[in-house]
Image (cartoon, rainbow, N blue to C red; front, side):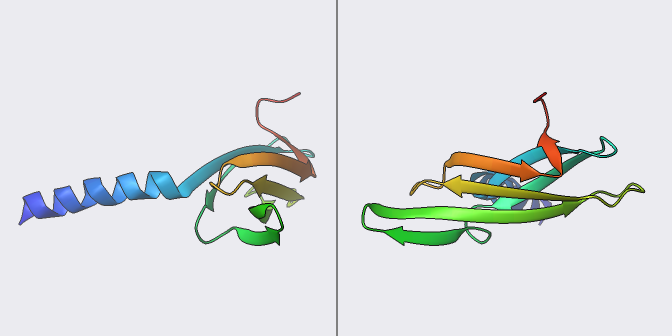
Length: 97
C-alpha cells in the first residue's frame, strides 16, 4: 500500500507544478520577503476580446511581520496562461531595485 501512496504523491506534485506560478515580492516599508502562489486555473479571470482570451489576476499580500503593509500585485497572462505583464503597489518584486 505504501508504494501506491508514494506514486500518487509523485503524480499529484507534477500536476501542481503545471498549475502554479510563484511570485516573490518584498514589502516597501519593512523589506519583508513574501512568496505567493498563483493557481493558473482558479485565480485567473478571463478577459474576452475580439483577438482572443487573455487573463487577469489581482493579489493583495500582507506579511507576517509587524508593519502589515498591503502589497497589491496585478498580473496579466496570455491565452496559454503565460505571464505577459505585472505591476506592484506597496512593494517591489524580489530581485528588482
